[in-house]
Image (cartoon, rainbow over all chains, first blue to last red; front, side, top):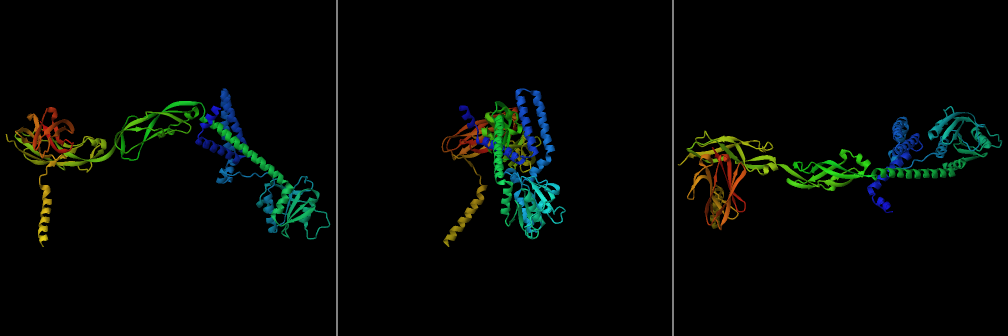
Length: 476
Length: 139
């Protein structure tokens, strides 16, 4: 009981979202592909995959390899062989219906299409004769006729009865969702009590209804009416609803439809439960499998908001991450998935930066146990400019009788650009070496400023100064 | 009218003072009120006066003095002579000053290795640099 509770308490909301999302994707795939050949083959491939896993678990290595090969080849074959079917599934449905909604499945005669077509034909005063068989066999009463075998649609029915169509004169037989035959000759009624305004089409409709339990619908060319012949009688329909009801009763759809809907609902619930179970088991085997502990050496990425700040030195460039997770997840970790990103402040100098646990990003399902070291020492520097006094660098020897009493540099100071840590302790810059040996009187000389580090430069660009000096005779 | 007579000369005098003011020698005053009157490098000191003030000193002389004199010393205090060679602190001397005026000297005896550019920073008790004197030790 304790284990059961601890198992469920260990599931986070992200895990729940993960499972539900994947279950829904699987369920949607079922909804989109059900009834297709692709779906049946996919079920077969899924079965093979389970078989392969079971064989591997049992130690049947060769058999497992063989099944694995067949499964891989099967997946490839499905894509190649059923590419048209797969394409048509995605082409036929809009984006919304891919993710939402349950497309209805046509199980029997498309009543709505027939009703709409009949009223359209009558409105256009195009004569039409439709036979919808009941339980009786009609073969002996249907003469001639051409096999059609087309899926019923309004456009097709309108075109069949279009006056210029060679088959428009006969009757059309609809069975299930298909137009079975066209141009069929029906037996005429032998009744003598029929009104004289009823033409051949009416008599043919009555003729079949007298002999069989079929429902015959006709659109009257002269009167623009929709008439149904059933059980030796004729009924004129002025509203589609009435014809629809008659058709439903004739086809027994009221009960059949409910049964189909019930079956469809049952199928969908089963598919949903199976999708959830499959995803849950897969998720469990991946994320909650046997725990594996591993240490990963990961480079540290420093994030700085000021691009001028540079890291001159770091106590370490990598950290050791102790992570745990299922062996599957641990094995599937790729280098780019594990990152350590540390924020560093803009202040320069040597500083210790903590590596918090949230600085480490890991793939889902992998847990961070420890970070070694937990802090890193970095030395940060920044480009800056500092005004530094210039001093003449005298060398050599002044004649013994002379003494240099003054030496002034113009400008007294120059601006030096460089990294802050280099400039920090730089308080004086010196000129190039200026020899004293040839100096006999006061004067001035131009000299270059020498900077010790190549990382430093004179900010103004002019690195020459003028040194003005004064010498005089020694008193003693 | 009297106001104009007084006001205009006063303004003229003030302007003249402002213009001429910077040309007058300004003594460096520390935060404690201490005034650095003189700060020179010299070859020797005789009595309380520097001899042979210079900015370049030959190794042959063997030593160099940093002479400083202060005024406005209100109470006994200290200053430091910080000697730097090529921007590196070589030595620091702590020197006591007594009111009301005082001269003090620090000395560096040099060797062959001491050749190069030098500077001495005169620093008061609070760390304020009162003056920097630059010189060179040559052959």
